[in-house]
Length: 286
View (tube, one colour):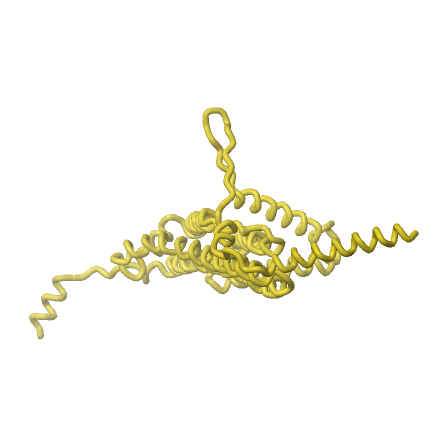
């Protein structure tokens, strides 16, 4: 019995010394720049597929983890169809209604808003899950510039395709040449500026939050990063997803609203022909 107590005491003493050493090392400032650089760098691996090399990065893997987790969560929230929806189903329905009402506010009809809502919600859900996964110490995919660019390009292509579907090619052309035909080059340039803005906004915010949280985790690794992460990992990640989805919806509304006005009042978009003879008569009479 006495030997067991001595052994336990010796083990506890060694454990305490090791714990204190590790605790001090955790707070000991090292090469912060190097540690942050390691966190920022992409993890890359090439797979040989025949004569080709397939590149897989951590952004791809984390994106699929986030999307699969999100699908599972929302599947559990939807559940089985019931006559009276439960609280989870009511919450989802409220989100869908919010998106539909926002789309109608941008000039879409209710039918168009209902058609746009699934894609807008998909953007929001995927970007939210990919951003907020950083709270679980996964590197967010948006810190890789390829992820925001891919989302932005997909969003602007969707804006163009769905707008043409709603108002036709003629209505889309009118939206590009309203109020003046001279605006056409600038309207076309807008389709480059808008996705660039979407991508840089998402990348800048998520990358900045990631670097700050890495710095905070290195300097103060206990408690504080978890509290601060509630904003920079969760709230900010959700906010950026909402902004991305909201702007995508507004871009559709800008085009569709003009197209609807053209269908309802085509005479307002026709340039009145000048009658030179009448002008000359009026000048002569004056």
